[in-house]
Image (cartoon, rainbow, N blue to C red; front, side, top):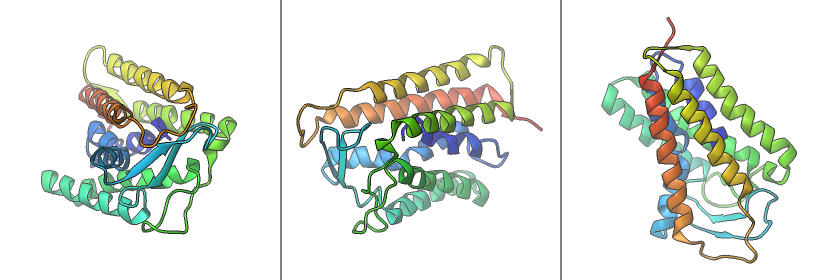
Length: 222
């Protein structure tokens, strides 16, 4: 998934003791932020293989640090510790860590068997990327259902507070459409260009900034 991961951030942000939405957007994609950074550094590896799944050509064959359950738990613990240091709130830390960990659990739905428990076999993944008729509506329900849930449980605190919400929804939709409509490569690309990882990191950064903007214009209802 891509924008579907943000469902956990939207839901978590409706707790009065949770970190703000922008922070939770970073948490929701921390696993992939780490993965693309590790790809650029040569620590983890991927290649593009035509039609390895119906929707995604990424062969994620080496990602033991980020996409193992143990690695995701480690990232969740580290993020939670950072939240605790910033806010001295165990509840906020636990919520932030849980959102980080949700990434691996949601990935389990869509990935082909390339996720692991601790970096080695057996691999796991239910493979919904091979079933677009299921994955596409599921992703949209996760992402925009989460946004509707968040908006319904918050209220505007600034004039034209709908503008950042509309901007976030629009960029989410455009980014996801670009992801779905990207052409499959004609041949194996190993390694893929660095621009792939850089564009992913940039997209996550833009979406987190928009989520921060949304949180500046809304507050949780009493």
